[in-house]
Length: 431
Image (cartoon, rainbow, N blue to C red; front, side, top):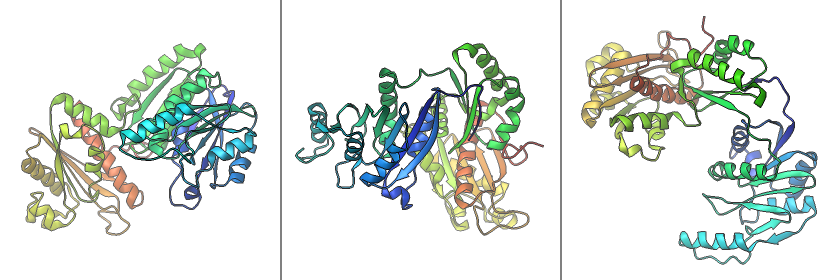
């Protein structure tokens, strides 16, 4: 992530991620990133992130490193099992009692009943809150969040389950604002860019950034490309609008969304509005494109299905590729990608069909087709387009980039934008 700002934020935020699994490599700390993004429109600065074991002393030591006036986010350890000690650690650090909250207990009992769980609340730690804290509703789980002022810090405590934390962040930020701890959100603009590297974003936007140095610029990698955010203080609203207009013209069809919506959802929205359907044929991505599509609720409204045609024989038998085409051009080629797309389109009766075939690595590359070479094709009723990509990551990264590029090809076709392939150098600095 990079950024340029004309003024230093006044409020310091510190994050403490609690969990043995984080330090032992069993899972990754993605919650800190979620918190940082949620705070992006506020005039705050995240100064440090601490990852600590599920131990009272470790949590207390991390809290001791914070300072009065800080906003401190603590995530993890709010469940009801023996290793969930965050409530106890915070209460001990702040030298306050843990208080039973009947309102929390009643909501918890109602949630258990709704799920058909027969369980006594006796011994359940979740209704216990450190004195001085208020609960924050958890719309996806049972453990409530906590927000309160303790030892001069404004402390916000959230569960460690990423989906639960994400769902609770709006309510948590609203509680902090009600308590006067979080600065009012500043005006911001967001551009979500597909098929563009961070370095390319920096290079492309440099002239605009030079003209508007006093605005707050930031960009960062996400699953679907790069997000670019521009913020301004209340006295620079006109500059923000002027810079945003320039960026709209400059970035043009690289932008798949201007709000926090992921690329698969954008594709789905376009397909549903048009009443069109889609099928997929995947080789190197091994089902990742279909998984990204069906990860969206409502995808059954347009997605017909797909074929994972990893072996050449399956490309022939299930995706409709002519054996002569494979023999003449190889599996990773424009003709094979095009025939895969046309074949599954016919077999599934879809309006559009997408095909991906490539060399994810680490082996399998040749001088003519190095690792990362990928062909993506999209077949429609009156058009067939294909693009060659040369990704330069490891196996997992190349598969993810191919998934992103494939979905963006669909988006581009639906909005009438040209495809992006290896001849349009958006992955690196344009020459």
